[in-house]
Image (cartoon, rainbow, N blue to C red):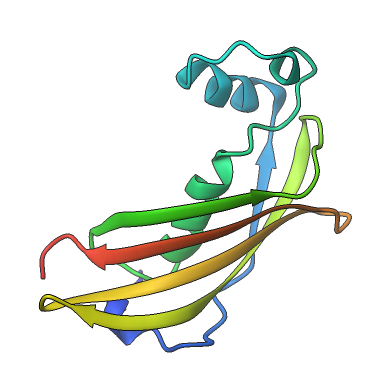
Length: 130
């Protein structure tokens, strides 16, 4: 069980490696949920915005409080088809206080198991209850 709070993350702290297997069906659910019909979906290419969810999951490995996902930036580097085994490596890059709230910025890199960099993600989190 995770017992840490967001304010306990330190800048530069690496989060545990997160392996994720993405099936064709799971990938298609991402595309369907976004209501996007695109040639990339028909080609079973992985849905890039899933990197935001993967960043949230990486943080959720160590933080047990309810968080607000306050900001997101995603950069796509390559494409890969499903099914694919992905690896998420994430670390805390910044901590700050704003209007009495604690924030943490987490950078994540999502690669294939073979090491191809697909996406980089920068997400900002704050506790749901200050």
